[in-house]
Length: 337
Image (tube, rainbow, N blue to C red; front, side):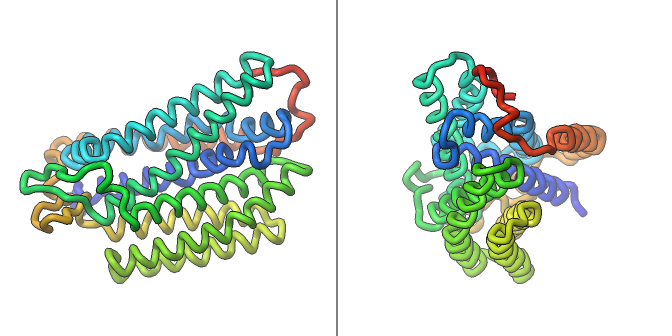
């Protein structure tokens, strides 16, 4: 297999890991005012992702770095054509991270409400815009003969991409609700389970419409398998939630996210950014890639460091695997752990 294809596959794996792991982070953040009846509930919710949220964002950093090094023309076009959207995502992620750290610094209800709003916004915006961005990547954007983006920000707000945004938004919200039901106890656990059931119907409707549109407009024969797996997994996740099988429900929502990402990248290949102006102007794994020597060096670096990163993250999840209860939250306000 050519190194260009290997790196396209690795980038797809990195985005898949990011969506699965950061997806439930976004879901927890979005549900903070919905499921958190009081400050203790909200602190429990934040503590479920406190030890892992920043580690989950490593997947995004590595995916961006890999794209820059392996496919510099792809990276350049994304950050020029999608500049405003990506800037909004970046600001939202920064505000969200600051909110996690600052929320417990002052024992004031007004202070906490302000940072809670920042957490909700910082989770909602990326959850929506990542779907919009990937919808445009798969659909294609206007590129001229020099592979330069010729559209505007409004070009990105097309029906297909917006449906992609609603899909990621609803699926991540469900994923987060299932995660909360897996990591909490008591009333909060029951409310999280009910929220997963409620959001699940909307997620199934959006996901089915988006994936069917993707398959009919851009898909290949084999990507029907990924579409089918995603649909079955999402429906099964809702059923597992109704039966109180949180572990299975979380595994199934994660499977749906993996299958959806596979369908998107499978529909995209061998392009990395199709051109809606002229197919000859499209960026592909061949014309957007770095030199073979660069890809070879990157491959050796990935072989050495990827197991270390995966091992560290697996260890983190194992250490913080237990459920969090209201009793585990100290009476005095402190920085969420």
